[in-house]
Structure formats: C-alpha cells, structure tokens
Length: 140
Ligand code: CMP
Image: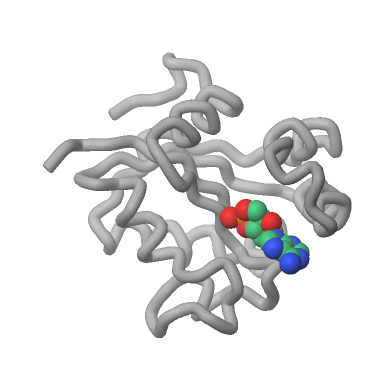
C-alpha cells in the first residue's frame, strides 16, 4: 500500500480545551506520523481562502468566524493510506453520527465545532498542505 501524506487541523474548539496532545496521540496511535506541525491563529481572510470551496454554503460565515476565533494546529500526517486512515480516525463530520473511538465522537461538541479537519482526497491534500506549509517545513 502507498505511503501518503494528508493535511490535518486541530481546530480552535479543541486547542481551547487543551486537547492538542490527546488528539495528536489518537492520530499517532492510528499509525499516522506527524511530519510537520505548527500553531497558527488564522485570519478571517486565511480561513475564507482555505474553505473557499464552501463559500456558497449557508454555514460559510459561521465556519470562517469560528476558524479565526483562536489557535489552530495545522499538521501534515504521513502513513500508509493516510488520507482514508485519517478520515476514519476523525469520524463523521457531525459528532452525533461519529463512531465510538473516533476523535469527533470523543471530543467534538457540534457539527460546526468538530475539533478536527482532514483532507478528503489526494488532490485536496496536496492543495491544503501547500496552503500552510513550504517544502522545507515538512520533515519525514
Ligand atoms: P471540515 O471537515 O473542516 O470541512 C468543512 C467544515 O464545515 C466541516 O468540517 C464543519 O466543521 C463545517 N460544517 C459542515 N456542515 C456544517 C453545518 N451544517 N453547520 C456549521 N458548520 C458546518
């Protein structure tokens, strides 16, 4: 199976509750390796750019307001089948639908404040990694 990279964020609701370590440990326990990580307080403009694909959605304003409301940990994760594996360990977008043992089931409080983000496909993973990291910041 191919070694892949994916992009992950630990969102402001989780950093505020001091869950950075607990969430990172859950990712590592699932076999994912953190090959880049930094703490950012994104601007409203950065949030709008990152989530541009959702700009017509009714929740876009709320999403960008929330994502620029506090610190986020942006990460690159590496491992076998990393994109799918990360989505499995995150759980469903809405924590009410998330399976037992997933990050969103354990930690998320609502569909909007759902603790983590992960890329959904190889193309978006590459784009999202490039949005936040230069090549020299990624050390495998
Ligand atoms: P994420 O994986 O970061 O991708 C887009 C985000 O939009 C999603 O997680 C949710 O946090 C957010 N989102 C999706 N649906 C809704 C909704 N109905 N209301 C508020 N936020 C939403």
